[in-house]
Image (cartoon, rainbow, N blue to C red):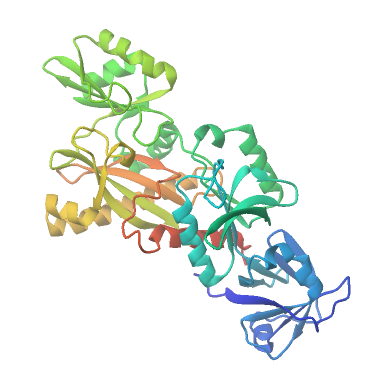
Length: 458
């Protein structure tokens, strides 16, 4: 990470000037020299949405301390009561000392018992981020769309191992972990985004991807294109055409997730065999003699949501169970994409999708690939999976609006070692990484990107 960041501890010093219109900070002479601050010139202190002019003095203290006049401590009371340790960076161009980060995790807030988490599935992520933040400085909290008001945010933090709701300062970056596509595309969400934009607060992972829009975007890349299964919006004509070309098809909701409502079609002994991944008809294979019968059976599904028709690929299996690979990719502080995690997902015996929500299990990609292809090939495939995932994430981010610094890329491998991109997710599950007793690599990577977005470019 950028070595221009310093870890500072804020402390009140009542002996500093307390003139009502003058805020004062005091730092060590060596820190003043390091930042090349001219104490005779105006300097600003920026922390969250608070920017105040300050008088800079020096005192014989350690570099890690920033002493503040009582009136300044009172001005940032909302922050100083929560945390006294922050990362600091001096921006010479604007003569501004920036403190941060202040991270808000945006998600759905539900009713909960006092002290319990009022949201689903993010407690572990919060605790990991809070642990990392405690080591370097800054604040992290959780909030919902309804928490944003004119002057503050109503959110949740952990105090003495209990979740507490309180008024919190506006963040330096918002991490969008809304699970609902409907909420993510709502007017309410757009209004919050507008409010954040007005305050120059970046929102990270601002939207879900449409599977078809992503497919069209990736098709423009000549290298990535050859790794994409043929995919079209579902119509009867498209269905007939693709059934003539391929022995297997997947019919997927354009805005689907977690392997739900996917239809698998195969041609067997002159009949069309159809299975669905979820719902009452799961595990019930249907057979149709004619395309018209198949299309009629599919109508109740396709009327509820828009579907894609995708070429089926004969991926290698693990003990006769469907298998795919999830690569988590993140941007680092310098904006470069990195593969932070790679796992194999093995479907249950009665399933044709390898999603955890549908009963799939996680295994080390290395051990699975060694068993299937041998040690030498396994290393080669792992390198290729990561390289292709990074290229895919970079291509999507480069042609999408907003800040994208996290993606989950799902891929399959054929017996001839060809790689195929199944789909990309802008809000990948946090439950796929192993070694859960430790801080996950994705959490460390997220924090790097949060810091990048929290501080202005030098």
